[in-house]
Image 1 (cartoon, rainbow, N blue to C red):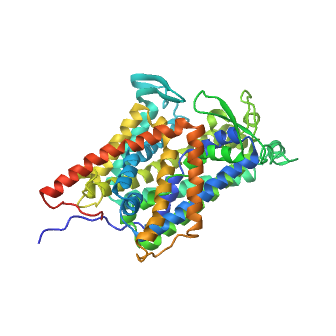
Image 2: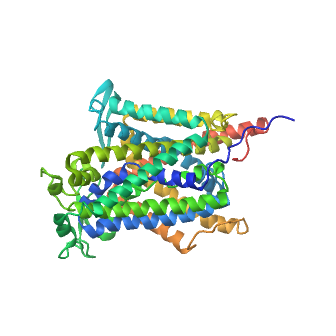
Image 3: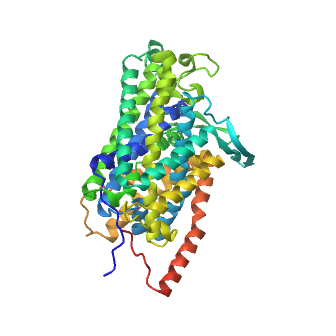
Length: 516
């Protein structure tokens, strides 16, 4: 009897699965996106409302995915849900975009961010300290979009990022237990650091100037009325449009949703989760609930320490406010206000922990999607094989790591990140729509957990996400059309892979069948 091929080992318990959710969500976004949100909404009330909307959408999404995860606890997660509900093309387009932009671009960004913040302690680590400068790609203006304007080569900051990518790729080759151990440690550390930030901001950091500017005498509701109009620049260098509250809150979701993204990563590892029909939905609910509550409290803490409005030319953090914090590093400005000279070092240490844990969680999870695609004949054949001893998708990890390193060197990951949220929203809409499709197509399928509030809450998510997509298409085309083009470029690639699969089926039985 021939030896059975190795299968994924179910090694992740509830704590580890929840750590993947939390660790993948918390990167560097929460420390910087608030400045951009504050400039756009220009109102303390709307500043917090942006995070409430993000929390509502993300929690509904996570609770909806819980049903799909419990119903189909297989490696690949969201890829599998799209494949089973809407067809293999949609699953492939998700995996294609995940590989090209979403997963690898985010890993590259947080890894290079690690290098950038390491420069606080070691000034020689910098994006301007070039070891090998290959070329400068000048900016190319295409309508309202700006392409190019990239520096290609190796500087000490992205070299540090590359080292992090290589290290975490190697670590995760040696079994999911080791990767999960690192994830548990760093997720615990970053959670404690965020909790400390909230505690400090709400106690020692409370500032009378900030309180007066943000909360007293009607300041909290300033510019938040239904009739208030907010300026939004259309595209890059386009005209300035005046929009209402509903539109501006949709526009700023680019920042807040990005900071709260990647909660779906745990579904990619479903084949390695113990008791997945219970632990996957539970980890999604616990992980997203924790992060979203902390994010809201952190943003509230910012308002207690710094005024929302500020002067971009001011010399002090207090006078610059949240809107014009130096290099948008709001958390650094907050700790600097509390601890003065040591604030920047404390915040840099917290971000180093945060970015390292985020990069590890996304490295661990992403390769499982490419493994699932390969098992379906839609990716390189070698990626569908597991290491006989460690039971890890070695080739998938190596391919993911190689592309991430290339993005670090090319400098293109920052532009790719601009396109992530729109592409992600499209796939979230499709996946939650698939929940309705599967309820119709497979009404008697086992569902150990059913989506909370179905059908109203999943429908609400779809409507909210569609509204954000429409607004971004209208007012922020630089974030939308390139992302849409990247997704559509996957169609000819899918036709190529599916034709190869059909040819292989005609020549003999496929070695790999359905995803395991």
